[in-house]
Length: 329
Image (cartoon, rainbow, N blue to C red; front, side):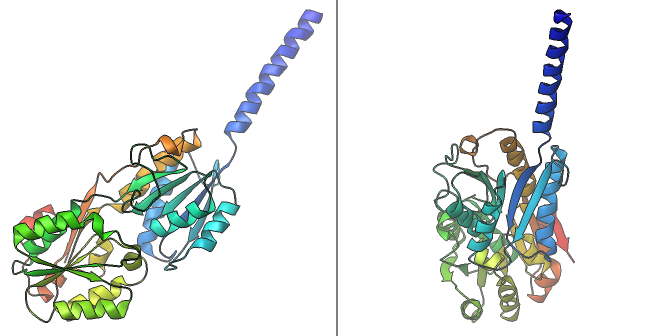
């Protein structure tokens, strides 16, 4: 009789252990997301959708075993209040979009894991110690690809064959233009193009720089990746000023071209958001962010606007049309 009681008790204990493990495995995990841009921005919503779909493909479904706490910072250059709010929710992990969001979150926590996307150079920004072993609670997917600078200038020279001068536009407070300058300078020497640095802080300075560039033929513009310009609401000012002053410009992100810019070439941001889901998955399953290397871009996209080229009096060469991922008629 006692032996039967012992076996029954052992079976109950095993069943309780399995139930406990199942309950622990089914615990709803909280994922904080601090996004750049506005919730009504279709492009930004595409990034969120790519991330959540990739996470679902890995077994994490919002409303079932994971809860998303999503915050949009819009054009706010100081998202500290949102970062504080997200950290206060005590999520298991946070996805940070852009340098401003990542820095703000780092100020609020050194323990909650943070996975970033959409920032150029995490080492120069002071976010990680090194790319292969970032240390601390932050890792992610950088846009750092120093050779892009030379590529932008080469493409600008290809689509505007009379290029003599190129202004490199960036906000010195938020952009890491120094990352791209060596390859820009190398390409400029090879192409015999004079480089002009054009630091800007507002729309007035953006207008002045482009007006000066357009006073003589042969001017072109390279817009460096920059949260101030990309998300801060200043992209429209650049596109309009470039059109009014007949200045061909090359950008990093495709939304510029869809909004009327000439040409873009750079890392595919949607791909970065999909890849970020893999790190969120690994960390939720026990991996340490300090041991997950910062990943560099693997997929790039080129978009060209034929209507804008025609307005600028440019004929897009076949070499660009054949390489373009998207051609806007």
